[in-house]
Length: 407
Image 1 (tube, helix red, strand yellow):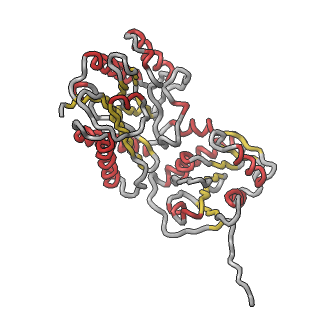
Image 2 (cartoon, rainbow, N blue to C red; image 1 turned 90 degrees about the horizontal axis):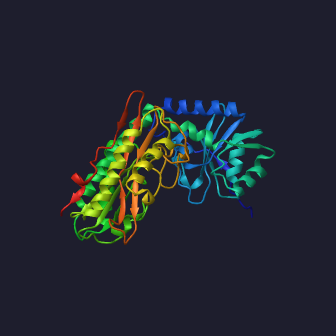
Image 3 (tube, rainbow, N blue to C red; image 1 turned 135 degrees about the horizontal axis):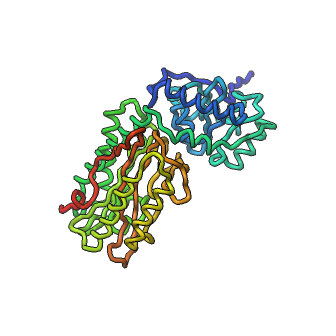
């Protein structure tokens, strides 16, 4: 009696269906890859093994869902190949600019066997040192042999800081969508309504808008943080089932995600008239926000902007309540991937603002319970830095004139 043996491949290709419409044009992806290849050449590496969600998406269009499995985008002088897990089927092929190889689960480390098939003789490669774990680095050495790995994370991040015209157009669409979510939240705020119910109204409005304006995009990951009272003390506090009460300070935060691109709207509101101390703190934070907006322009530094706003808060005896830096870069990022740390408006970042950058202005004051005006106050706008002007692409009004809700 003969026994049949099923072929169990280590990796394979599956071009299952036509290529999808990606977030950007082929010319855009080619331009990004050209810049990366110039960096590779100047750094003396033969191949780049990208492993983070943001960099794989930036150079290929494919945004992976890890679920404990590794992914890659391997870039050489002539190829761009995403490496994906078999559980994803043909979706990575359809949503990748360039080639795709699928690795299987039949034996451990087939991922690295697939990577090696793309660069079998490479002796110098670039990696993302901030993303590759020690365990992964050891396995890579086992499979790629005597290879010299150079950490190019910081250099790749710098390439992403300057946004293309296509990127800026998508970011503007995201800001418009965030405003739509904010309007839905504003309309849903009523006494005794739960935080989660208000948050869902904003999220649903944004997802409907994304599905209408970006029908070819992946509809995933958009979210809202809507907080009330004590829950406003942290910028990233999760939504709860707490019911809104008259007199509550409120924090509106909408985050539409379009093909891996994050935008945001953040506003302080009050349900009913704020007391005198709360109004004073709120107006002080609005003043810092307007000062910050006026400071953002080509030629200034992140640390220089911080110094000016810090002086403003110090004069009001409020600097001790500042909770984080005053803004950050935008692009391929989310609350769990993609931070461009070189463009944060913080005291220890001296990056100079130049045309093509997109940054937020978002001062926040947090006063603890027992302090007059207790709560978290935050405003957030997004600005696009041009050659001759700076465009504020956030249109939802801020301050007491619009955001005191007597409902």
